[in-house]
Image 1: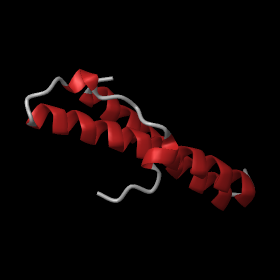
Image 2: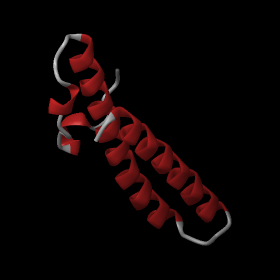
Image 3: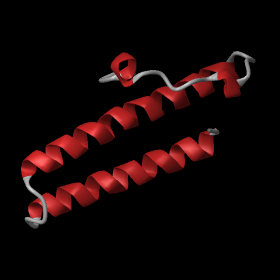
Length: 81
């Protein structure tokens, strides 16, 4: 996945997050469902941001950004840059 694809994926997940919050506010889904789905989205977002950081770091230091790999969510969860 290249940088543009990662950014597109992040934007799509942020849109999904907004839709979930709207759905719970309007009563279309319950808060437990929202919480579960938001947790999944947050883990996937953490992975995307980590992959993007890896690619940028590799580029900055003259390495091949295509060698960056998605790391397990347990490794990147709640990362604070």
